[in-house]
Image (cartoon, rainbow, N blue to C red; front, side, top):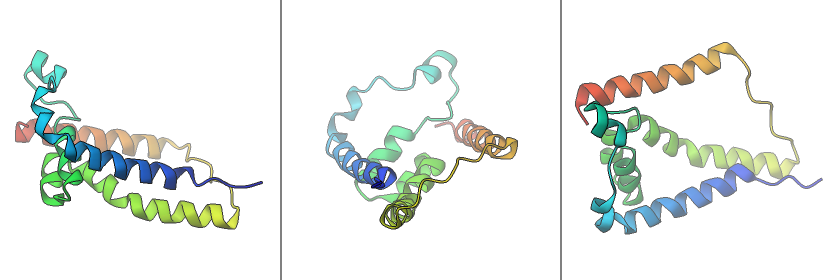
Length: 124
């Protein structure tokens, strides 16, 4: 059975999307903004994500890390994950099972809570 490198293909599409986002930056002022922040006056955990994506599309990683460090870090790791996926597909190995542990779920929630606290503290 042929193994398809889905993660590597998704990485390629992500790179294309980042480039398109950079090209659309001149019209980004037409975006409505964060509804949660508009309603509550407090930044949400994803505030700054659009500006982060546009900065990465311009290859401005410093600005991207300023706007959303977690997203910029995850996007910086994508080439490594894509290389792993291509190797996995080349060897014919199946995808490993996703971790089903409480620690893994709690760590994701902790990262999300930390990002939210950072965005609120910075007033983004």
